[in-house]
Image 1: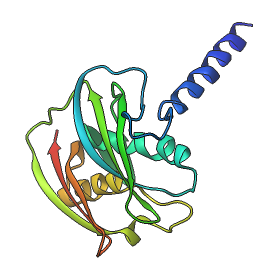
Image 2: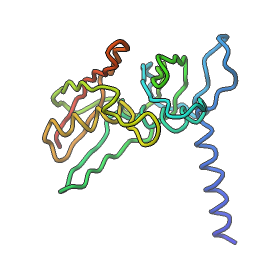
Image 3: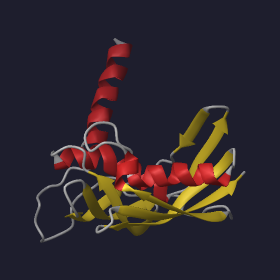
Image 4: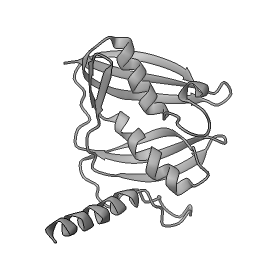
Length: 186
C-alpha cells in the first residue's frame, strides 16, 4: 500500500510538472503563465525553440523548459565517449510573449527565476550554426540552446566544468543561430 501511495504521488507530481507551461488564454491582456512556483532572482530572456509538433502546448512543455536551463550554469563532464550535463533546478518561469518566426522556430520572451546566475570565470566561445545542423524538421532534433552549450564545451576542450549561454540570436533570412557561451573548467 505504501508503494502505491508513493507511485500515486509520483504520477500526480509528473502531471503537475507537465502542466507548468500551460497558458490560461492566448490574450494580449496580460502575460502568459509558465509556473506556479517562482523563487530566486528573475531575469527576462529571449529563448528560441524548435516547434517540432503542431501542438503549441506540447512544444512549450517539452522544449521550452529544457532550453531555459542553458541560461543558468550547467555542470558538465566528459569521460571517454560519455558526456554528462547536469541542469540545475530553476525556481520557475513565466512566459511573457510567444512569436512564431517561421514554421519551426519560435521565440519566447520569458521571465526566468533562478537560484544561481553567477558563472565561474571562463572563456567565451562564439558558436554559429544553421537550423539544418539541429536535425530533421520532424523527429529527433536538438534545441538551439542545448546544441550551443554542447558545441562550446567541445570547442573548449575542457573535460569538466560549467557552461552557460550569454546570448543566442537567430538570423531569419539565413536561418542561422549565433550563440555566445561561457565555459569554465573546474
